[in-house]
Image (cartoon, rainbow, N blue to C red; front, top):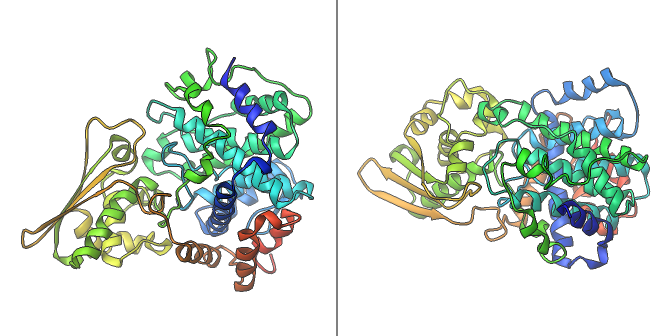
Amino acid sequence: MDAIARIAEHVATTRFEDMPESAIKAAEVLILDTIGVGIGGSSGPMAVELADAQELSGTGTDAHVWSLGKRLPASAAAQCNSYQVHNSEFDCVHEAAVAHVLSAIVPAAMAHAERTGGIDGRRFIEAVILGVDVASNLGVAATSGLRFFRPATVGAFGAAAALSKLMGFDTERTIHACSLAYGQLGGTMQAHEEGSMLLAMQMGFNTRNAVIAADLAGLGFTGPQNILEGTFGYFGLIEESGDIQAELGSLGNNWRIEEVAHKPFPSGRATHGVLDGCLVLQQKHGFEPQSIARISAIVPPLVHQLVGRPYRPDMELNYARLCVPYVAARALIRGTIDLGDFTPAAYQDSATRRLAENISVDIRDGDPPNALTPIDVTITLADGTSHSHRVEYVYGSPQNPFARDGQLEKFRANCAAAARPISEDQTTQLIGRLSDLRNVPDVSELVPLMIAPGS
């Protein structure tokens, strides 16, 4: 039997009451983080234009685009909000899966909840946790490197699963929702290699398609059954190889939501290990950035593939977020990285350029194809002194957690950075209600707090 049957059964039969408090709390924290990032992402490249473009395919008023307030059909709103969640590279990530596992799920679930009304916080959390289980297990099961953009492909499955839960599907219909999502999968890693805005668009496309898939399944449409392990299934076609059977025992035992890492910085997660190592060494030894002669980072092959690209003073925004030499240089100069570091003036700053051009990123052979750690960083100063640090658990991971104060500061900063900023009162109310999401009687009532006044 194809593994999708066991996965769909897990989604259809698991209830909120079956979930531990640790998973529920993690979901509340990460849903808040995802919504904040999505609000802030409204100021990202072409976010307003993407929302406007949806009217080319028709109009509707099911759900809102966060911050902007535009009302669209549920699938279109989910697409826009998912794009906004991912376009600043600030969204949380399951590191072992190499996937931003909430970035499709939360926008899809919220669009459906707004469309239908009456979905309380417990049901919403239940659906998100199960969607994260599905997306994360597919990513963890992969045994080969990325060929397609995995956050989008597993995100489609996770979103379809979460919607299936919200729509009350049984096991068979959940299989069909996932199957219909599988038939629409897409996402090229060429967008990542070039630093193209298509990367975040692909997250949006797959989120939109998951909503369409669940709607079709709800109307009785069906799809093939062996979508993971069949001759032309996900493992073998989208992922070159994988062992999903090995992960089935985790269902109902390991709650993948508890393994998801926060992103303290708005850059590719694969840059964070080097950032972390540089900042730890600077804080420990107190050297100034102008005293640095060179920096060497030894990284797993995947990290080099994703973010080991050279610094260029004429970088585009999406390239810069995925460039270790640039973000590490800025972090050492400023002590952090924030949304304001991604401007043409910052890319061309002379101190940043000098430091970035003296950072090398080299591959450590023998690491697994999906590993993001360990990272070895060595900083050599102008006087010949060298300092080294190995990063096993990157800041923001469950083993090296992002402090609550930092989480809330990030949320507030994103709300303030929106294309149409959320008021301080709205932000405070969102923090309070999302932090106690399990007791919200109807999650659709949160949406007005996510829309800028007057939008």
